[in-house]
Image (tube, one colour):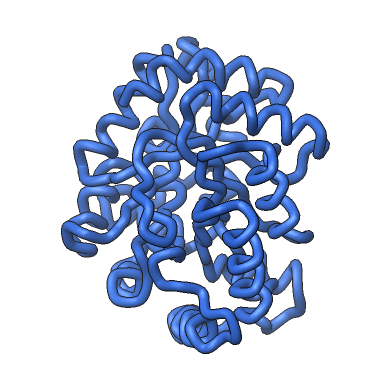
Length: 292
């Protein structure tokens, strides 16, 4: 839901919709809407994220454009609230602001050493400031990148819901239990479009190995039964299969359906692999994913 709108179906999460060639991004966004995807999600790893959101909104008519997620250390609450107000007035109620606290290694590297501190308190303070901004950002237009129990609780009481990243259907079930029945639950699901297990694991490991460096993700995986052996050498096949769906479009749709059955309102899919194949993969997946 963005300002009262429901968000359902299946979306696309893509770094290339954020940092790709602007003309190609606009063309891809329009095609994704025609294919039936209901939301387009982009990350925030530096640069003007609001310009990228506006590009998606300009290229489409009805899909939701969402930050997955806006890094709260990189944008003031006033800037964020003002951008949401401006873009909503221009393009309608289609901008969902996903907000995240990220992690110390990334934030300190991208901003200044020691900037990252007290993530729970920083998140609460940011939400306070959004509500107090000259053009307040409504709670129902925000979700948090929450995976831990304490961050899920902040999301439950302070926002419309959560956008968990790098999670499993088991986590989705736990998150739904923690959030209650009415909060939005919008997980991201990584996928590889191949039926070759060796290729799938190789492609998955390239991405998953990066996230296994960060304690917020490994701690979350420990809560659902994974351990040190699963985090070694770029990730065990067991953890890769848990985090990354692969196979035919129908196989991948089955994983998305697991999230939906566990309580997700909407699932956004991140296709891993060769960027030059992205649009072909999005097309190939669309019939199975948009029917859910």
